[in-house]
Amino acid sequence: MNVPDDRRYTNDHEWARADDAGRVRVGITDYAQDALGDVVFVQLPEVGATVAAGGSLGEVESTKSVSDIYAPISGVVAEINAELVDAPQRLNDDPYGDGWICVIEAADAAALDGLLDAAAYSALIAD
Amino acid sequence: MTLRRSPLDGAHRALGAKLVPFGGWDMPLAYPAGTLAEHRACRTGAVVFDVSHLGTVRATGGDALDALQAAFTNDLHKIGPGQAQYTHLLDDDGSVLDDIIVWWVDESDFHVMPNASNTDRVTAVVPGDDVTASRAILAVQGPDARARLAAVSADAAAVPRFAVRRVDVLGADCVVAGTGYTGEDGVEIAVPAAAAVDVWQAVLDAAVVPAGLGARDTLRLEAGLPLHGHELGPGITPLQAGLSWVVAWGKGEFRGRAALEAERERGVSRRLRGLEVDGRQPPRAGYPVLSGDEVIGEVTSGNFSPTLERGIALAFVPPTVDIGDTVAVDARGKPMPARIVKTPFVSRPAT
Image (cartoon, chains in turn orange, purple):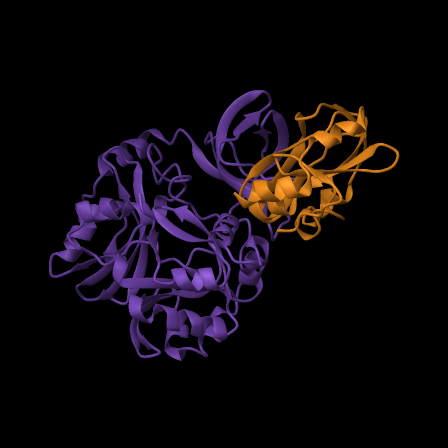
């Protein structure tokens, strides 16, 4: 399972990657998309919505189940990946790239340091 | 409980299938291509499912026909040896204990095929032997199923719709029926367990794509076919499920008949209908169906339709709700507008 080491991870299988401006791009992991199977629908958050770390950010539905997406970090949703509305399979095809879900303007980008690094997340999904 | 494994278990694992527990069996959910690709392969080409988890109860002898006639709702006198029939086993209250395919193989040799976990319910009412472990069942389905299967066995590929034949396939004594659960043309092949891997591999070599339970479910849903435990089960009668054609009123006694007659007399309290939403979000089993703010029914099965590229569902609604009516589905607090539509949602082109 692919776990790039340029970002942080949650126990709920989201990834988060900060840019220099303190904006945090968010998605679900390769492990998550594989476990879900074919994604057919994504409920995206609204731009401008305030989200709290661990709170609901949206939903991903596959042919077999519905899963919540949780915010890895507190802040305000600055951008969403609207391409996912008509092409949700991008979550399967490229979970760390074209399958990104949203960008959060983080209240405190340093809070990312409290999330799992690639090694810790790899250990989590190896269990 | 230990999960039962199909004779093809090793073949599935070698292909990289994801296996899941289903009716007490460990069966493929999907192969690496994934559910959507497998679904589309069945609508446009040919796929093969391992459906060994279906039970086979073999009823033989002079009493077998009478026993089946008394147990099930449909009338075997509508068909004869060499044909297959869909039928129901009811409880005394008219509930569908199981939906079943009967393969009438020879004069006094019936293969009764219940759902995975319901085999004991059949052996309780039909004197016969549970031969499930002795064979695998391959369902080869799709518009190209027969053409591709012909490379393996021309005789198997030529078994007509709802016919049942004994066929030699690669030297193995098989029973082949023109049946399936996808809304496509195709056949189902009962193969002796020892020959199952060879026949499976030969079918794959004939450019037939393996498909799992995920695609089987989206295919049967598009075809508007019921699944026991969802559209059929405790408290659900064939009349509510819109399957009154499975009930042969003219044939005499069968279990559950009195309750069913009473229901026919007073009219059903709810009816299974198809519904379609505008977007891709799947209505799911258990979601309430709304008319305005009022809950009027419940979704029994729903998913994304890969063919229509929108959410579709089967749901119980009041009998007054008709084709073309607008309702809503409560998706975890968010109402999705939906239309009542005819089923099947997807039909194969007339040939």
